[in-house]
Length: 76
Image 1 (tube, rainbow, N blue to C red):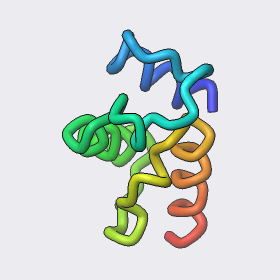
Image 2 (cartoon, helix red, strand yellow):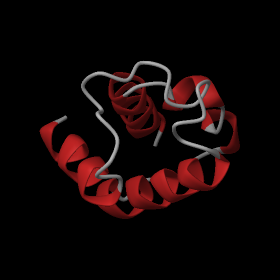
Image 3 (cartoon, rainbow, N blue to C red):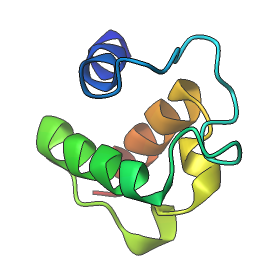
Image 4 (cartoon, rainbow, N blue to C red):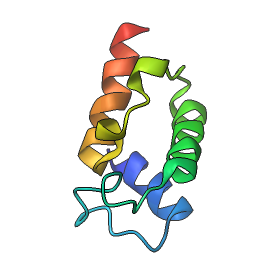
């Protein structure tokens, strides 16, 4: 998860990923940012991002994002 945190901080330096627990619902990560996150995750972890994983609850926190990456890896 440290790699994920580093990746997110590099790309979104103004967001405190340790503190924020409602990134999507509070529009800290808007839809364009979420698309950017998906692109970063696809590149970093060499995963395909199925449409069913593209919902806001999967982007609420760094923990939710990490869980989503791991669930996708398990299905591939």
